[in-house]
Length: 200
Image (cartoon, rainbow, N blue to C red; front, top):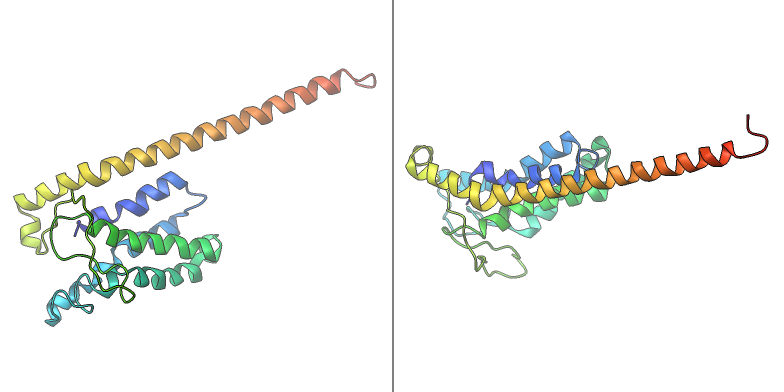
């Protein structure tokens, strides 16, 4: 799995790309929680639940069904965020599902049963550039952990921030064109008004 910091990259970059009017701060916070929620199944290690089962790590909480279910919380909270219920559901569902998609890009662990219970196959991406993160805190704070973080900066954060920046620039340019268009229309209206015979 990627680190918890990199699972947060999807909602952060998506919110930057879409803007605060579409993704308010409270919706972003909920999206951050949704993006890391699937790894709450890590408690299975403490309970002695076998790794690889649907009740263990990379089990049910990593399925698309779980993402859809947790999205219902987004639908419930959406009015508090100033969003439609459909938008709230879609936002939380996508943030939760992004966790499993990133896990499929890692080079370790077992595959993701994304379509369980419809399909029991565990999936990995053919392209797996993300270094799997150490589970223990001690290993995470070692040279191995630093290597993993640097890998995630290159393979996840850099391209996603580039896409988010491009979207922000595009939004800014469109807003500028809209303002220019309104300004031009106002200018023409003023000229037309001043040319009327009854104009002061």
